Length: 297
Image 1 (tube, one colour):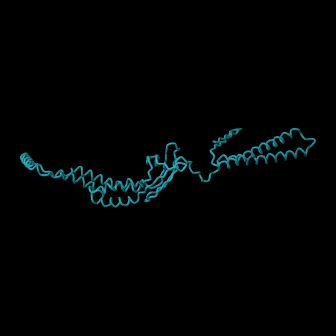
Image 2 (cartoon, one colour; image 1 turned 180 degrees about the vertical axis):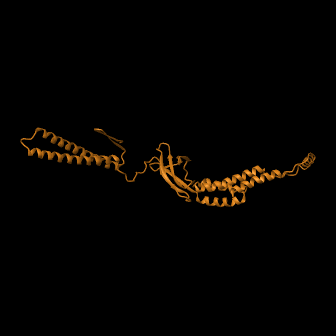
Image 3 (cartoon, one colour; image 1 turned 90 degrees about the vertical axis):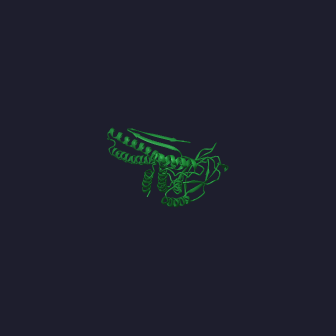
């Protein structure tokens, strides 16, 4: 439909250009004299140039298309302005009908919000700079409703002497004067979502289990070798004592590592649920391990 109007406008401009009458010089002088004699009569309004009419029709067609596109994208305020433009009398009649219908529907669908801001002590605020999705929205709150496209928006509030505050609000389509109450400078609401355990707690728990398992293995090995040593006394070789001492030493070390690792894993798991800002890093290398912990108070 829109492309047909564009072609028709171009054809009309060409037809007007071809249909102009050419006058001979004598006739031009005669018409000039008649115009001078009758100059007291009101002049007839000149018709708009064909190029101007074509431009208007093209603008109407553009607005017709943009109204549908922006409405589908949820940009109702902009779509409403476009629909009003293509519903004006200078646009083709077949476009005006649809645009007028859309203008009424969009006017009912556009939502509006009323922002109420207060200080942490409850005192009302009026001089508040408000941004919506990073764009300026208002700098003075007077209790009036303001139009806003539906959907989720990120609001930022700034007032002198108070910390800036950001909140997410969902604006419902078609609902007028939705009230958004905000306390500027107040701490954000606590995060009630369940927290997971840090990765380090799982690593330490695994190390603790390995340590306990190693303690059991070295302890059993040392006990077995000790039984062999007891069975050969007093003629046992002196070299049999060193492996036993080695196994018992390894068992004691494994027990210590296992208990410390399990204790740290339990502590990290509990601390992660308190919401404290902390950082834990465990790095292992050949023959050594580095434990790094940082906590912000």
